[in-house]
Length: 272
Image 1: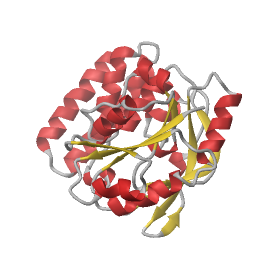
Image 2: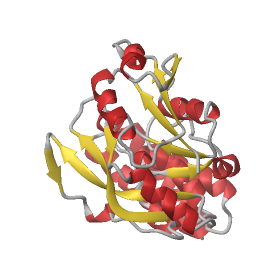
Image 3: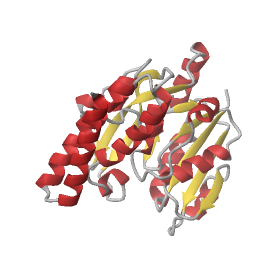
Image 4: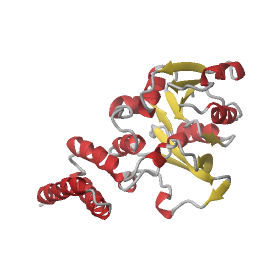
């Protein structure tokens, strides 16, 4: 099977080299590697000097979703493997996923378990991030259990559910995987085949408070298209708005708390 690796990046030249080394060390080599430079001002444009086989594409700074989408649109392969530029792959990552899909052709997406390194030290993964495979929509509702760098996705599936939402600054992966999981099984290779590195100030998750603010946007979008799971989605939305309401009161964000309270009333009425 042909695989295109899509790597979005922004001002991470040195770290990007580490990610690319892990790609070119794969026991199952991808057909192509695409770097989407999302408006970097460092030396990222020089990456082809050290890695001459990568396809380098520059775009004006537009966010990670726009970058990934551009990579998908420029890919030649049926299968897309995403890799964030601050992550790395185990040498057999693509091999294990390719073998899984060859043996399980009904699955158009898979992901792997992951290892976390923070400030140079491996940390234990929180229980809530435990990985499961198959029909995992319910497990995906509360938070994102699938790291983009762990995924392998068929283009046909992306044609069906759509690409990353460019209007979401964060939780864009949560949004997309929910759309996938609504009607599709997702395979799990239960091995730690990627390493995620935390502790960097420029990571999106470190720049935004109250991630549920973005998750409720994704859930409200989903509610418009997924009628069969309406009750479950509403329950999740309500739970998140109640948490946001408490947080807004605690931090004396009065306008936000008023808005969240109105949302709670709306969805409680909708539930009834």
